[in-house]
Length: 347
Image (cartoon, rainbow, N blue to C red; front, side):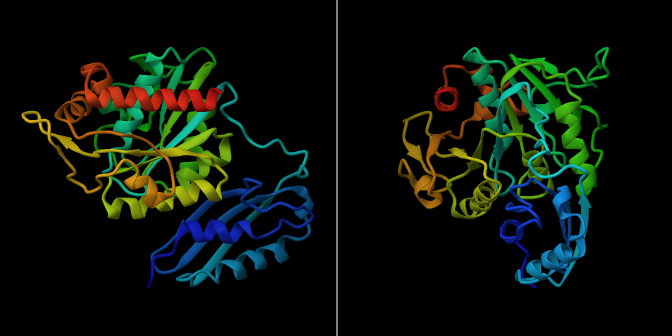
């Protein structure tokens, strides 16, 4: 059985029209959860405006019939909830009203250095004088506590909100701060959605210019929950130059497009290795032209980060390369990417 594509599910739902409106469940931001099993079972949870009241059975059948046309789907379970307010009266959720520019940072697969890129871009933006936050939304494999060398639980303020840690000018929150070491995360859609919403509304972020949101690999419920819960300014895809990584990052880019999130560009991580003795560049993962990854992904390459020992050591020791070696080639490239992002979003 072929693996069911979440992107295809989103695309199919985007073709449907909510009864009594001219909008799809995707554009309405009504899809609150999507679970896909290996044996072809799909469970989708959708909230609808009051115009759909009385049409639930009809719309449920339409969703089921539509999703059964996706290759690999054997059974479809649909849960609908009709809101009290009508479309047009319902305020679309924006749980980060005090954040000027929420930015998603994602990848199609793990192991491409997405969190390393997120951490160093956050520090670079803070170094440019911006108010910056970092939300670790990788609930399955939170690595931000290690990369900032922070251990312990955050405190709460008098309103009961979580006070984020702050280091190198960046405010930080991660599920890793709230779990004991090696505690596995086995949550499914509804719990993931609730955790993401709590990180947005129950954390005292204050006023921020940028909040970088480090997504888990892939195109699952966490990505959908973030997009449904706030107005996102843009997304950055992280990839290595090798074809297998580029194939997967295309899925992440397709997801951003389906959710109507502007793609700011691609960061090509582990782009090359420069010999410390002779200066010769080796393209370990392939790719030897300026826009190789960009050409294959039909996207702008914001920057190319080299493989260096200092980047790896900084991640392991909790000292971002922006702090460890601020004049290094990698840090210079992170600074250049941060300036591009700031100029583009503030123009």
